[in-house]
Length: 340
Image (cartoon, rainbow, N blue to C red; front, side, top):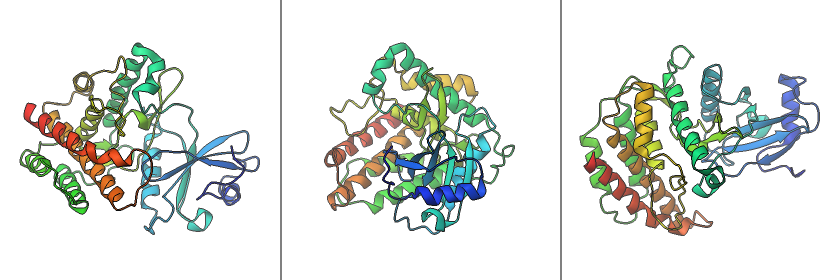
């Protein structure tokens, strides 16, 4: 681990704070490294040579003055830690921006692998890959079985009108990055709006539930569910629809958007849905809507990335090909709705 501090985290400042609020936790100078990946919030591993911890903070130049994101993430992890849902043990939340320049929280370091591609899964072989992905469903069932009131999350979101708000939110996101004609996207948005399902009882929703947002241990068990920044109270089937979407074969050569679906042994979306229905007892007959909504949402996200790329605001490998993928996601969404 480099002795040069990464941007956004001063190890000496962090240690001084930890010594004040958790005396005895750290036994020597801290070193830190930034973990690559992640959607928006920054993640660091810090060590004193004996113990290891993880620090999460907003991106550099974060414009929000509130600790909302960090507070939410820390709150949901703290609430879920005593339950059957595997999450890292929370250590502390710091809302004093004088320490690191923004609010942040610290949690335990959990060893494990976030599998992002079929190639990464290949060494596991078909049987172990299948078991890992099925465990992903079982953990989702555990999450959705948590009583929000019982763990202090009864006010964690506004479940009434959840799907309608989500659809409107992503429609606005689409409008904000329109700079070309996208055949079928308005048709898909309108079709989703005409056929909103009746949501089951609300649960804690992860919001971005997929294989690379969990850590798999050497024993192939899920050690921790990560990246709770989009979590809220809402319709649990949105998590399942997203998981089904990420488990579909994209069939796009050298796609810059990775899924693990091509790995040998990877269960099909239908199998994952069936297992969730059997284990949760929920009615999944409207799952085509939720899966189509996931395709729509990802199409909007990718179009936003493409839009920023055309403005020269996003640089790096693969961004030049993101735009080609958007019509593929739209087509999948329309087909999913039509086939029911």
